[in-house]
Amino acid sequence: MNSSAHFVLPSGPLPSVVVERDAWIRAQRPDLDAARRGLPTDRPAAWLWECEPDGTGGVRPVLTVFLTNRECPWRCLMCDLWHHTTLDPVPPGQIPRQIDVALAAAGPVPPNTRLKLYNAGSFFDPGAIPVADYPAIAQRCRDFESVLVECHPSLVRNGVRVREFSEQILPARLEVAMGLETAHPEILERLNKRMTLEAFCAAAGVLRDVGCSTRAFVLVQPPFMPAALAVEWAERSASFAFSSGIQWVTLIPTRGGNGALEPLREVGAFTPPTLSCLEDAVDAAMASRAGMLLADVWDLERFSEDPSTFQARRDRLEWMNRLQCVLPRVGGG
Image 1 (tube, rainbow, N blue to C red):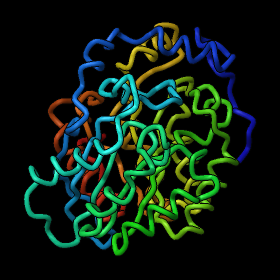
Image 2: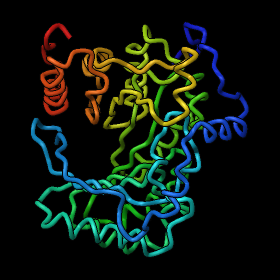
Image 3: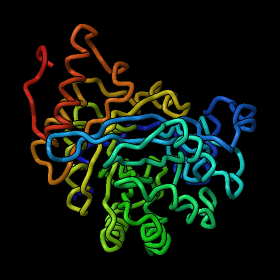
Image 4: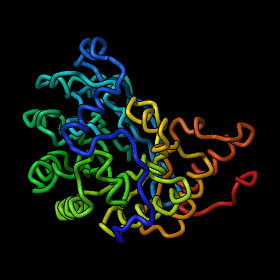
């Protein structure tokens, strides 16, 4: 990966020192502390049924549980997951209770169902998911085909907790998703991820050695990325993830609204992508993919330039997710 950027990063108010950057990001947020202090910790923030491509042209059911949990300590520049997090760590025993609530509400689990446990942070952060809760959580996971959790690359470096949990959920298979965000090294540093591309590769190698399936999230047009280069860097970032051994890559259009991105937008350091930009990025990355490539279609309408073609364009992306090939564009894109 060529670390020369081909362009000068736009300036903005974001501090260059990590401690100051953390403080600046937090200062841009709306004050939600009262609501966050009152969040119940004995039930999940939400749960829902989804379908996900199975890699053979079909789909499989997915039960996604959004666990109520403490805020992630990394405070990435673009993240809005902190909205529904607690101010303090969740007491031991509460995460299994939350899963029980979701399972009871979801009803019978169909065969070959995948389970996603999202905790607005890193599953293998012991300050988020108590290690003592692993056996109880694992007991609730074993009837699923696979279990997907998210984690910051720095927390999978030695693989001990990953291996421990992976063995506990057998015969279910563990999948671990990590946010790569971008393969542009300077922009990655500005996202406050506190991760290098080399660290991401190392974490992917650890997960592969443990025997986990792996996923990566890539942002389309992140902050500081010129619109003219957004597609190129989305494709390069997906290729970087695949070359690191990642099996699934999801392209996510960068969404504003978290507080920190709005000041950057005012000075031209962030421009949300259009639906056309996402389509171009998916087309480019799909053509060169070395694994499963997915477009994130959640809340996609906000990026649409033409309401009359939106549903057909969304449907196209969903079919591309399923069939893993580039389909003809709708209405000229």
